[in-house]
Amino acid sequence: MNYYIITGASKGIGESLVRRLLETGNTIFTVSRTLNEDLTDLASSLNVPLYYFEADLSNPEQAKSFINSVFEKIHLSIDDRIALINNAGMLDPIAPVKSINFDLAEKHLLLNMLTPLILSSVFLDRTADMPIAKVILNISSGASFIPYSGWSAYCSSKAGLDMLTKVAGLEQGTEKNPATIFSLSPGIIDTGMQELIRQQDETNFPERNTFYKLYEEGRLSSPADIANIILRTIFSKDITSGSVLTMEQLKDI
Image (cartoon, rainbow, N blue to C red; front, side, top):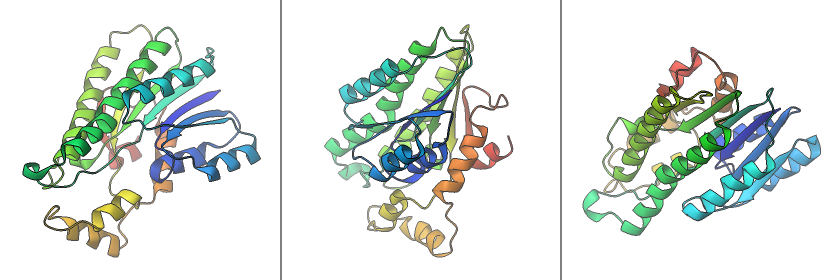
């Protein structure tokens, strides 16, 4: 059995991943603030186990409750594989540092940084004794290494996520039954986040027109294409634990 734990499944990459995984041999656990009824209906029609949780992962207690509830339902055996995909995230607040909304910035950092730490910690602890294929994939961004005016929270949280990946990968190197942990910058994708970017005032985000031009020129990747590449490679033994990859690098694996 293949077990997949995916955050942020209401739309975008998360939804595309779940859709792609709805086939015999997979059991899926997913979470978002609002239920995606299309996914639950499709899973039911295909008779594929899909456990859908509604939770706000920017709340640490709800994040801990979610991941612990998942492992209450999982009974791993030697032939199983398991993956955690930390996909949920947010872009706001978009503003210069001097005028940042503190409450929104706190929510942002909890969701984009603390939640992947919590979920990864429980995942690694609960699977530590199992000599099986196990993977944590953190969905990062080019903003983790390219600064953008107005994106202080987003650039910082994604840079932090990449460093979490590197540290956890280093630690797993000394484990008896190590997990593979890697971070992926998926590129510019046609999602709701891109719509939000295009709606910004240039005062808060000077690069808005650059992203708008990419959209007009049809240069955005589709979530479905990205999901296909991820799922083709996620359990590859050629991925080095602790690595931070771009989509182009992942395609070559």
